[in-house]
Image (cartoon, rainbow, N blue to C red; front, side, top):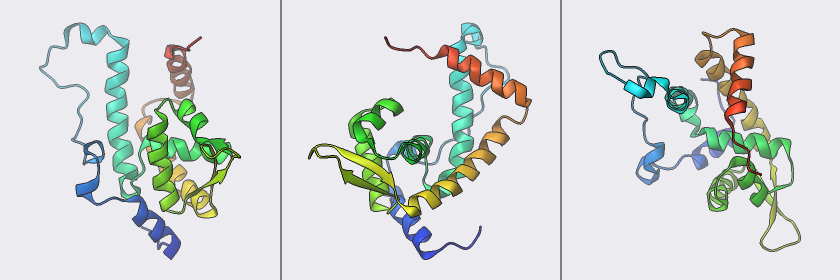
Length: 179
């Protein structure tokens, strides 16, 4: 592992909660086997949702192994990317984009703010804040992006570039848009 700056070490230490204080969802993920020989899956073999969920579990396990040292989950990573590319986004809008409760976004933002990766700026309403990554937040995000790219290449290595594009397009068709 490359040598870290004091700011990087400090930011990562603040992001990490002691194991006893971490939610169970952040505990060490069990090894996931998407298909166990000798098990009859019956109708599950025909269900698109089941196949997508099994793939997601497998991909999440690799993501956790790849970025666990940074205590970055897919949700945390996604929020950093969205904030970086949409400076000044509100917490409410971020929650909408992420598809999570506003209280969940507040917890993520609190964590990033304590780690020095993000700052809230007054939006003219005491209940609303605009979100901006700090220079350290941008620096850390670049490191996370590289790790995520390596993870994504690893989990999709059996697919050609064209198949990867096709898979993303097909998965996009499964997203049900609210009217």
